[in-house]
Amino acid sequence: MGRTLCVVNQKGGVGKTTTAINLAVALAKAGSRTLLADLDPQCNATTGLGQEPTAGHPLVAGTPLSDAVVATSTPGLDLLPGSRSFRDVEALARGDEAHTARFQRHLTGGVSAYDFVLLDCPPSLGQLTRTALASSNEVLMPIQCEYFAMEGLVQMIEIIREVMESQANQLQFGGIVLTMFDHTLELTWEVEAQVRDFFGEIVYQTVIPRDVAVSEAPSHGQSVLDYAPRSRGSRAYVELCMEVLERV
Image (cartoon, rainbow, N blue to C red):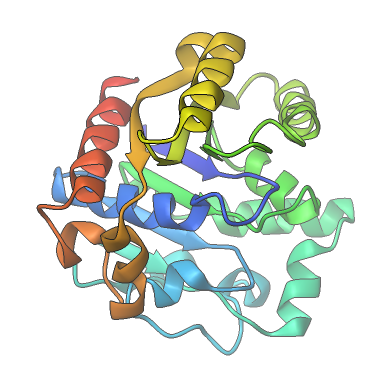
């Protein structure tokens, strides 16, 4: 059975979409059939892989995944592109029970062909994030190595706990990954120590360093693994991929 990872954090600018893109590419390069689903109205996961947002989101239209996904330049990696349509954003975020159930059916239907499905969520605690969590079996949370890293995490964890309870433990806390790690800053080491002390073994050993190549790659419509394969950021995402594969 494939693994569906919900890549989520309520804070923006923590490397959430960057992690979703590069981990998805790394998994595909490692031989895993992978799907990256862009659920963020900003559509950065879509453009970051050199694709164009759709006029209408496939999950709103009810289009079967097999008809909606597009192949990327990375063999083995498909993309469910996002949409910037305000109407689609509102529809995806609608919280009524019937809509949520229909959304989950569309999101989970047809993913059996994939070893990994990564859901790139918007930076919020809204209904769309909750529905994505309910459609997943693992949570992957990037945390930026900055002063406010722990801010708001209690709320995010509470939402995850609620989904876990409502989904009869289908959802598991897959792991936390530390991003934008600057080994020259004392603050970075302090944040890492706090996060590892609080969360323990669920924190991945791999940390994602601050690396200009990671920041530049999306502007070229590429992952950092393709844009700068020998960079520190590329090596870090390969190592993260290996850890994800080892966690079964």
